[in-house]
Length: 144
Image (cartoon, rainbow, N blue to C red; front, side, top):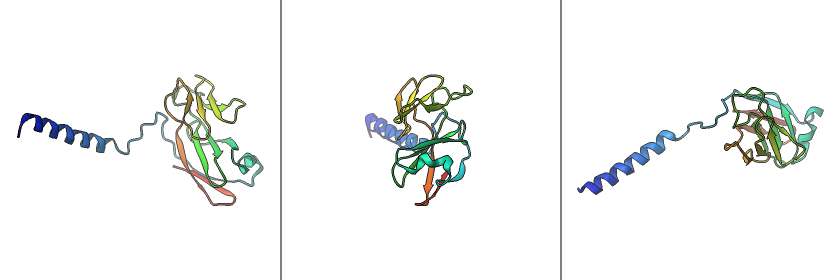
């Protein structure tokens, strides 16, 4: 074999190994928090979640959790911790009178409420998302 063939083979093997070792790594800057709770959508505290586009802020996660109803059967749950200013106490997203995005109270980063992705920086990473399970009628569970 020629030196060029050996170099190409080495690069191919190296690329495959690197891709396997990076799979499954959590690269989110927001520290992981154990989350496992259910809410009853019939509770008046959660009435905003009774229609698509509605959202509420609840306790849990690192700095609270934003629950958003994407459509009739699908919900989103995001940690309110800003991904730009993770370790500054009290830096979290909240509503700024706009139902399309939430904004960090420290750095001004804005995140789309329907996806958690960055709308306007300086943050460059989406909000940490938690799993949701809906029973189809009145109970929503949020979990890791």
